[in-house]
Length: 103
Image 1 (spheres, rainbow, N blue to C red):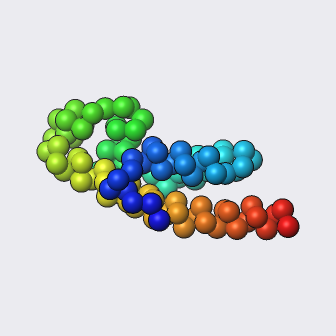
Image 2: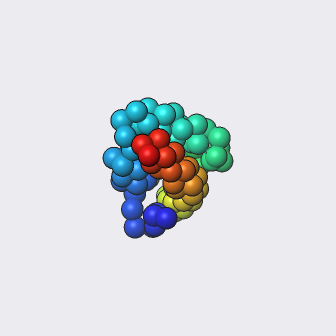
């Protein structure tokens, strides 16, 4: 499994996507969006959306949510860890399905 303390979610998600065949990539994006909506807490989801989709900086997110920068950073880290646990599990299974389909 990837270490989310040394890599950023964007880098990890990109590396997963690069290893998938094109026909699986759209399903992968849908799956990731579904995970963000369903596997994260409300605060984790807010932080991930503000940081990765709205491109806000941590201090700006902290101000908007009324929490400290430290809390934003910790929430982002925990959200990434949770996403990576789910993604790694399903990515491993997608590889198996992909490999089996070409045997």
